Length: 391
Image 1: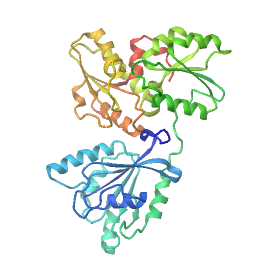
Image 2 (image 1 turned 135 degrees about the vertical axis):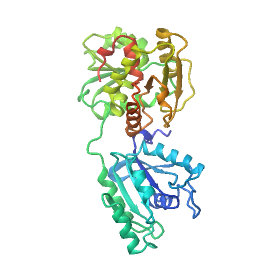
Image 3 (image 1 turned 60 degrees about the vertical axis):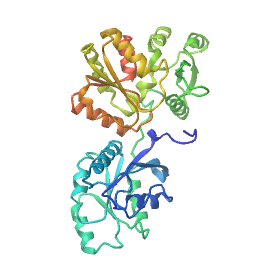
């Protein structure tokens, strides 16, 4: 990832949906100003989602997502629909492209979006008749409709104008309600085997940037030097943010009246549902050696010897319930379909995914009555300091 690029998890995700050959890829190419999707008259050209990062005026950093077409009843079409469903789960703004009057597949798909704002684009108005356009308008009368032609480059100014109306009213940030201007915030950043050489990881970078934007006073230290910096400071920190893996070690070294949280807990609050995670951790009281737990990571990386999700947390739980406990790991943006097989899901902070994706995971788990919690919450629970953590 380039240092000057916005992480995809902090971009507004705009998904383009519609039947095969409706012109989704052509619309994205015209809108973005460059060819990022394959365009062909042959049906079903897009078989996997295609992603394009771009800045869109007042919306800011966005991610355009081109999806496989719906309406294909073949086995391959069913696989494409599965990929499309994965994109729906992370879509902040949906763009439905319609180019003919047989709209039942599109109307059926719209039921999957729930609270997601939707724009309907009637594409190919250069070849559709007035009666056909009128019929499509009637079928989607409850949605905002824009008439476009990707071929003739018609209607894109209006499309942009309507898209910009979806700008979030207030951007949620990591330290909302926790840090004021001139507060002293101390970051405890372990440099263990899991830490990347010559750099710090994304959650720490994002925390530092936001604290600087808030005009807070920021200091960073390794765990070993924590007592030294506390002795040097003229005032107690207003907040200490630690890596979850050293929660207890930090807690034992700081004054009792200093607030403590972790990077994972901050991201859990920002992108997930912190109250649901705190409720979910109670499921650990019922976990036994015959239980199954899913560790849900959002990024893909080579696991290290001290990996918090794959090694440390499973070892904590097995120490309590027995070595026979089954722990599976999923990684990346795709959430497993078989979550009903598990007695508990433990989700990472989710810094690499957008909030819509993480919250879709939580709703999916709640809908199937599967407890879900978070790395930082689990570690604080096992260390006996969950009630001492700020969030």
